[in-house]
Length: 80
Image (cartoon, rainbow, N blue to C red; front, side, top):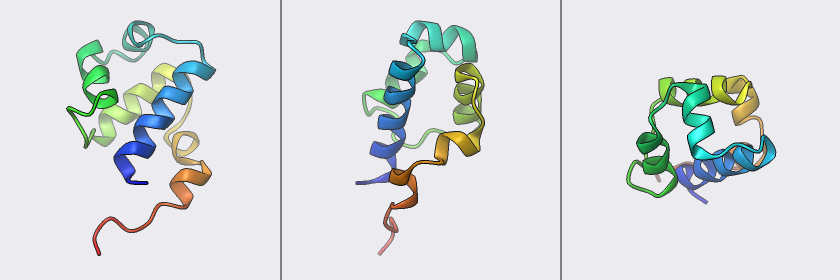
């Protein structure tokens, strides 16, 4: 699995876990709904760390908590 897919899946899982819609996440994180949709639907496959930090703030978690999953720990190197 590539990094983009793991990030997207993590965002979707957190939305479900926190019972947040894209609109609610946008309101809580001050990230435009269109930006979130672009990440989730593949138009933006390289979200910046500042955007991810803002989304984490909206979820009420840290960046460390966001990336602390077995999927991130098992990512293969992107450049071969």
